[in-house]
Structure formats: structure tokens, C-alpha cells
Image (cartoon, rainbow, N blue to C red; front, top):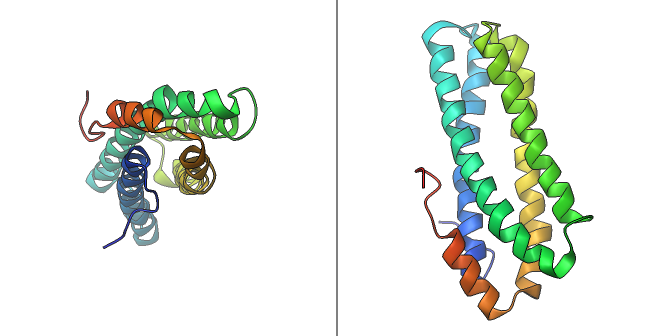
Amino acid sequence: MQTFNFKMKALRVLENEHRLIMHEITGWFDRMRELEENGQADGPELEALMDKVALSKEIINRHQLKEDRYFFEMLGHYIGMDQGPIMAIQAEHSEIEQYFTNAFVMHGEGRALTEFSPYLQEAYEILYMHMYKEENVLFPMAEKQFRTIDEEKLLEQLNSNILEET
């Protein structure tokens, strides 16, 4: 069983969500590669894949919303929001969204998986590195900067289930 890397409970919530997201995106990414290699990238298999991608996207959206509204806002009080790591990470949120949007639009147009899988691959790769940066740059900054009252407030704000609409 993996252990948490951070002592702050609020950061553990985000870290745990990252693990869930990685599990979800790795599942559909591996399935996408399987379908492409086996030449089964159409019909029910493709629809099932895109359903998995859509579910992952909803989870990612809820997670990112929590980060944007609460975590980045609080950390920004200490390190600023207009430049630096928070601005770069928020830009990645938009970039990830655009790659998913492109893939869903192309799928909706009836295009082949091989035409839009590069967008899904980019979303996967950016997400993977994005979470790595958060856990290795922003989370340690927060752990050093936040006061106890910040941690308690942030934990209260973040303590929700990203698997369900709130």
C-alpha cells in the first residue's frame, strides 16, 4: 500500500485524488492503445472507451475546480498568482481541457480514433507531468507556507468526493 508524501491532511486529499485520476486515465489510455493495435477502434469498443474518457474528464474537472477555487487561491496569498508556478499550472488546466475538447469534437464528428487519439495522448501526458509538478513543487511550497488555520480551512474546502457531483 502506498503511503502519503505529505503531512497536511488537505494535501493528502489532493494527493489521493491524483492517484484516482492516474488510475482512471491509465485505464483508458491503455485501452486506447489496445484498440489501435488490434484494429478495433470503432463501434461499441470505441463508444465504451469514450465513455471512460468522459467519466475521467468529469473527475478531472471536479478536481481542478477544487484546486483553482481553494488550493491555488490560498497558496497565491503567499507566493502570488500572476506569475510563477501557479500561473503555469493553471495554464496547463486550460491546455488539458482543450486537448479533451478536440478529441470529443472529432469523435462527435464520426472521425476515426487514429485521428483524435493524439489529442487524448497529449491530455494523458500533460496530466501525468502536471500532477508530478503539483506534487513536487506546489504541494511542498504549501506545506512550508501554510499556517495551521490555513490547513484547517483548506481541508474543510477540499473534503468532498470528486466521483460525484456536489
